[in-house]
Image (cartoon, rainbow over all chains, first blue to last red; front, side, top):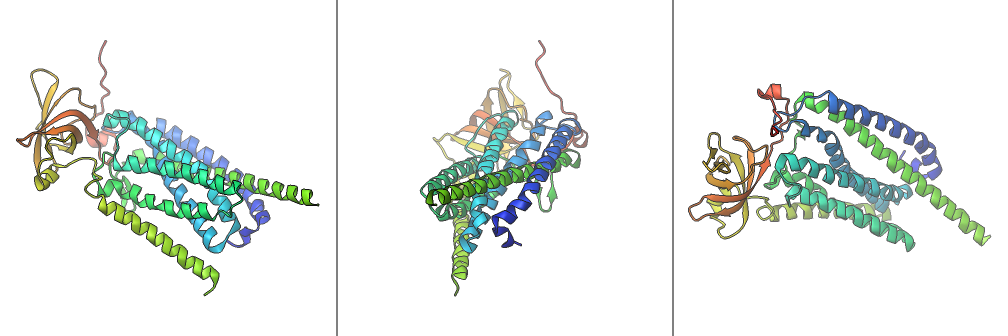
Length: 239
Length: 144
């Protein structure tokens, strides 16, 4: 299955319908989740209506981190199995990953003002998330430089693996250190968010994840098309 | 050993090294990277006198006293191990209340008390509707 997809044409045949499904299903779930989160849930007992920003903030944080995890997995598969699509996938993930990390920082800042009384503090969680954003930018610059110099994408892939150092730090920052940011609300053993407030979050989480997948597939298809065009150009000039 | 297996071993070693580095960073920064001192830290390590620091913990129930000047408030910050009396002059954040988390910025005094020049509210990981919490959330605005 994994190796069958190494053939770009076979991948494209699957990716075309998958893009449309992810995009429209994702947008529909986001729309429903946001509508439900804005109108169908009660306010929080302490924060009031402010709590509703959670339906955007939590999926953004999840995708910022899940984005880097998948970028690292793609980099790893590229380095070990030389899977040609893996390098394309890793590059395609970087931009939406950086975007959602930025969205997480922005919505977190807007949420922090009314609840904590500050836009920004150099707290363990906030600082490590900001670092992840910079690491995304560095990866994008490195991947572009490597491509322009005709490199084989090995250096960006190594950087992709090295960047995972941040993921456990972000996750455990609120558990191991005193931070202004509260501890995790949703863990494997359950959630400390009341069910009546929590349920639309599952819709926006699933919706944004599908939307993210759609962006990645689109960017991969664009990249493969560019590669094809470049190869054709080279053949024409040599002929 | 095939080249592919060699790369796999090297890759796995790299991932292990990265995760190990992350764990070392976390444990090495354990005390330095904290956002605030808790009252228990101060009892254990002594007062950080002469430094502008943050003190965090819970506002002890029944400890909030408003002074006659109207803008000074005194309360006790506790973490279950120790208590620190705090004095703050200024506007408290909306979520500042007894039994809830707080981070105060300011300086420790020689007598072990703390004078704050800024307060941040810290909320916990629980979210629930007002009916469940047993009290209605009121949005307070100043009447014109």
